[in-house]
Image 1 (cartoon, rainbow, N blue to C red):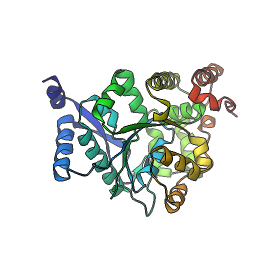
Image 2: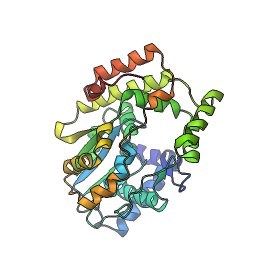
Image 3: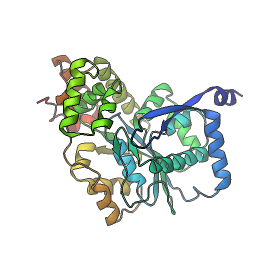
Image 4: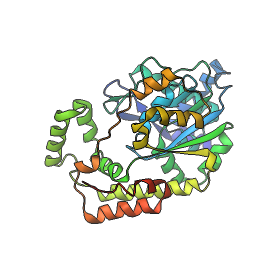
Length: 329
């Protein structure tokens, strides 16, 4: 009875795809999502009969997992939703098959809108976005909210295992903590995303960003609450890892992935037991920029903030790989 009441009264935030302007979310009643997933399974009762793996990203905002999730979605044996927040749906009591149907619908709709999000298209040309004739891997990329839901509900992994009967695999994507915190600060009020959508990149973007920072519309310095939020996510990820077996988690260092995307993507595919063709790997690698902007340089830092981020990196094994690159210059 209580779950039915929750479905009637509660909502779930889903992405609102609007082609190149895509960046917002919309609140949808849970009962509507549950009904949509149920009806889809009635029409296609065997759609997910060959699924072997459920993959969930485990990550931070602005860490690169949107790109990696979309590259996986381009694989002929995989469908990965964008911004659906599957773990939120698990938390709210939806069934495995309903969530799978919503994942598939999300991927198709995202593809129909050019796979644009915050001014960037995640589409891999001539690959299998939004559909699969032989689906074996399905999942969701909303990595930061997977962490936040676990922080709200420490029984979430147990609930996930009871809901999903397939093998569960987690992909932990990390980016240098300094760049992560800097980008979180820049994008705190969403004005940064508006500038990115309008100007994409290059000199025009840099000039407009500087102007917005000078006017106070975009942060010119690191925000203490973003450092605090980053620490919360790191602490929660470490708690989650204590409940997961080593073979259930793959750590992807985003900087290494961008330097050699074919090797990085092959490693993820092997982890998920899907075979990457040479054409697939080549097409995906064209979407990846080998050199990343160090957003840490776009904001001012206090010494105490730098020291705090270094201390966070020292205290979490999955961030130890960045300890030799903790310089602002």
